[in-house]
Picture 1 (cartoon, rainbow, N blue to C red):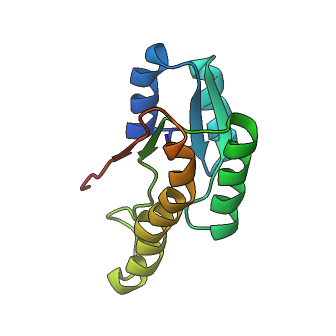
Picture 2: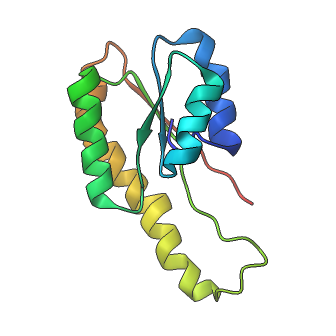
Length: 131
């Protein structure tokens, strides 16, 4: 589950926890990711992932493949959102938002599809929200 250290992602992780043998919390903030994994307990584990960074996406995919060999479900929940009170002009918000929420998610999914194909019934779940 991407973005699983808070908000909707953490709630998704909590709901999935009783029905899985392994739950990867993929988060860019290692402190919050480790805290979420500790809060949830086994079988939740934290793996660092920054959707705005191609090298981080590639490293995450390589770690998942090396440690686990396959992926049964990918929950694309991670995203960035500017707060309404943020003074950054809208035109300057769109670049980082699209880079992370669209292109980062696309690149991650593309990298993980081979691992999903190794699962008996690999699935992708995309979460979208309007703030």
